[in-house]
Length: 155
Image 1 (cartoon, rainbow, N blue to C red):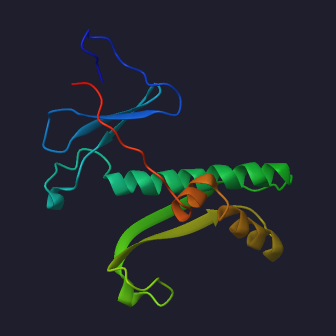
Image 2: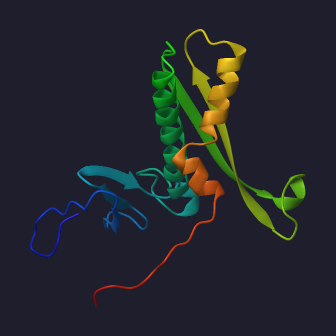
């Protein structure tokens, strides 16, 4: 993104900026520090599919945080494991299709997370890594209480 003086803006660490590009109805440039991402809606939702959808970005946050959390834990335990990969799929399901869902909700968000770890692991190690995945910070954010404070700025 470029500010009104024509200078590239790099948000402070921990701040993410999303700004319309004007290239299509929903196309966005996202800045996270010095990193750039693209977001858009899929064609069937009225976008041009020029970037990840907002829910794909949310799933990417959960997947990447899970990998990093597992890598850190395995290193601390001195476990010789290979590559870790995590696939996350998001869907909205009807609460009536969910046996363990709270009553009264018409739809709930469901994330399906699949973890693959290369290397020889005992069943106890595999179980422990599954427990650790549940503790990744993004997982905790998504399953915890979230507060979003919103205000308009500028004029």
